[in-house]
Length: 96
Image 1 (tube, one colour):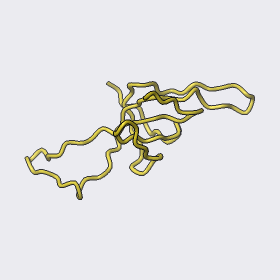
Image 2 (image 1 turned 30 degrees about the vertical axis):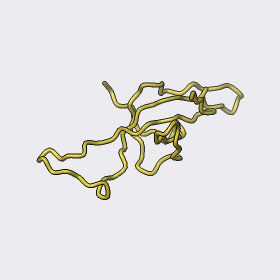
Image 3 (image 1 turned 90 degrees about the vertical axis):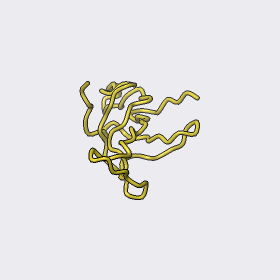
């Protein structure tokens, strides 16, 4: 299934953190926090400005980004969890 978000919205897939600590302890599911790092899956056309033009988004599919733990709307696409956020909810782009 292909998805194209509208306007300045971005579809993200959270990147799961390791289930084991550096010391070798396993973290149970109940103690895990939501990951704040995600990969961009799809982006909208851009944000409309007051003068009627469309400002393109800074992120593109494949980028790794940092988002807030409780940002966006969670949806299930093709059996996988995704998050839809506005571009302004993205805190940073992770440099490779």
